[in-house]
Image 1: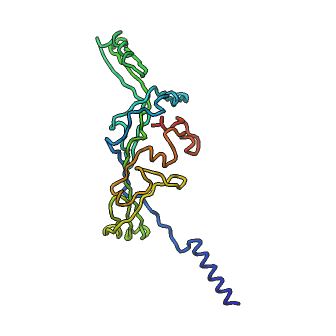
Image 2 (image 1 turned 30 degrees about the horizontal axis):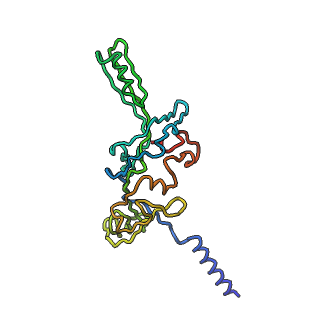
Image 3 (image 1 turned 90 degrees about the vertical axis):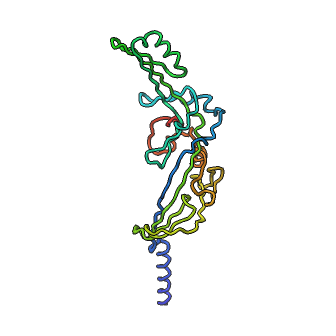
Length: 266
């Protein structure tokens, strides 16, 4: 009977240690060498205006003196203005909404009734403000316009990523590196990394765990993805379960003041 109790105790202890991971220490998988860039000249932007361009007034929003969104039109942007690299160089800013002020200044004979009329004539969809400084012989014309950017969802983005695992718990003597930056993985110490074949597979998943497409497919083999995977902003947004017309207040906890559309936030 005593041997039975001893055996039962050993089994219970073993089950407890395995279930509680008593002898296991978690190892973090850290990002390494992640980069993202805009593929200039490959935006794929069509000349057909999307549905939201037909009614820019639907994005009008005012909140006191803090926020005022009043787009009057919709137009494409040149590639160099449509996308910009962030300061960290690991992210991109894709323009979806533009709040633009153009200022013309003149003096002497350049000012007067003709200049005032020219300011109005040049306005188009913008709001013209003509001013003259009495006694200073100077004048200015300000044209303020807000507009939606046409087809930002079609901007093409290329991303590359890597990962690193330190099996030596911070000593960096037993590292594992992989990803799609290189065709091979690396193993060894920080100062003596050796290459080994890689069969990594990149799978894009939506928040609900289902596969989603980026670059036209959800699964990318290592041989097809070395150096980066290209797709559109729209595909990334769809993978995230949102669109540029989603309400940001419903995507974040707490109280968020501002536009009710992601499209007019940038």
